[in-house]
Image (cartoon, rainbow, N blue to C red; front, side, top):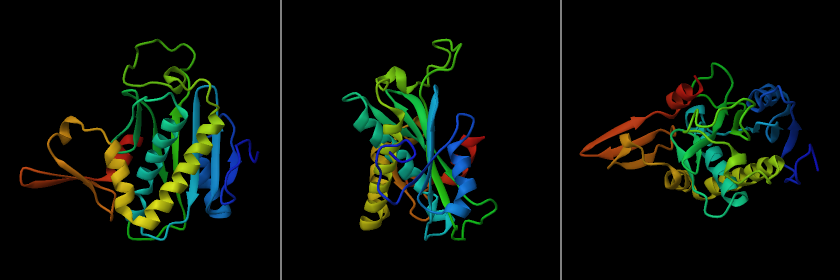
Length: 234
């Protein structure tokens, strides 16, 4: 194994991190020097994270939608590695829901201060997931959130989850490149939960920005991906 992960295609350059580090921040720090394919990851007693450096060819505004592909890939990995028929959905913008409760999210990192019209030298997409509850956790304190260990993943090595996410992400990008943005959007929208504010609307994703577009009752509303990610990170 390279970097403690199961075998991966040669395009990946795994970099294991320590318990006190952050996969997204680590990938962003390494991106200018090591470039595309750098895969930072860590697994601790209570969380698992990974982040991949990309070298996009599109402006940041359009490339930002890669975070949706990252969320979809994480959901794919959970479906393959988890118990049969366990429901896995997405919640706007990039949260991953397992059995009705949030278990993690996809994240995005870009060079600071870069305008949306500029093509980034690098972009980072990743995921974060809760593995176990921290010591002292009180059951029922946050019923809207769950952990992998309580949803049938206790026997799944976290390294397998990281590798599975990476493989599904690359497969998703390959399909995106081959069939265009609608291929990725179709997968994301198929898993995206219908929340109260979406009821009755026809949903779509804007290929120029990744924004969620709702159409219904003769009007169109737009929910910006960039703003939603910023609010989620706040």
